[in-house]
Image 1 (cartoon, rainbow, N blue to C red):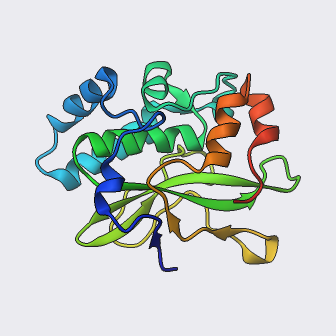
Image 2: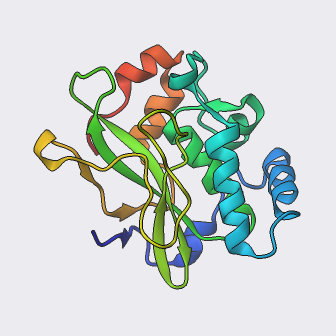
Length: 197
């Protein structure tokens, strides 16, 4: 699948916004702490990915009712669904000047009823975009940071109405952000996430 930039200006993928608040002190502090152990930007990106994947719980997997959506809140509360974790990773990468895009998949819903939009990120290295999925591993899910072939949590099944969206967005999709911001708890968020973009 060929990924396409939503914005032709690469600097758009370094910007801060309400959800990707990479200028927030907690984001900056976390990025600086991770960067101390990295010899280059690739090593930093890999460390940031592992941190978000492993240290920030996926709230559905953990049974955590809280809904986070702003990167700094995800880091402060240590939890979030895939979209929130993608926002946190995007903020950490952009804090260290690594162009990062938000991207999405349409997957069968966990409860077996219909579909849901799943959030992930793409990082730019060597003049190309590489998708990464920091949602968190569990039995049957083994996502890894990779610039040499995708190691995502899920592979869409076209026959089941699943697919990858090729667009690389500089900011969270409005439908996703609206669902996150308006949900009073994770159970209701699970019922209000978009089914398609």
